[in-house]
Image (cartoon, rainbow, N blue to C red; front, side, top):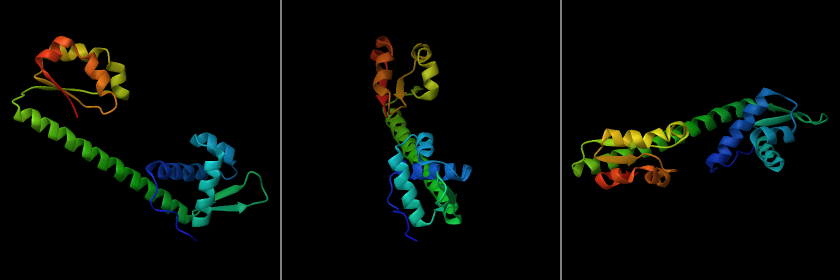
Length: 173
């Protein structure tokens, strides 16, 4: 039994974990159906299954049946749990790095004498409140606006009222 390469990208780790979860849900499932569920090419599923069979995480227990009947082994279940834990650890680490960036930005604003700061972000939740947020910021009369998104910072900065931008500091993380 060969151990699967441990230097995997986060995307491949997540894909392997999702594939194992899918295989635990049903025995006779085609690679085409798995590819559709995972949103990847059939060749990708074929390659991942081959690697996981070789590593002992998945077994093909009836090669005479089409589609093949796959079974996740005990090692495969442990592997899936480990992948989940690694994904959680990575997400937590990313969150901690982002919190550190926020603290650093706030400390810098505090050193500059800023007393009131408005946090203005974008994402799934902010999409629903996007039009309301700029006018709400103007009414709060902040000393500074800290844009707390990495993906939509430029869009947000444009939305902030020009008169507000001239009287307060607007900063991105």
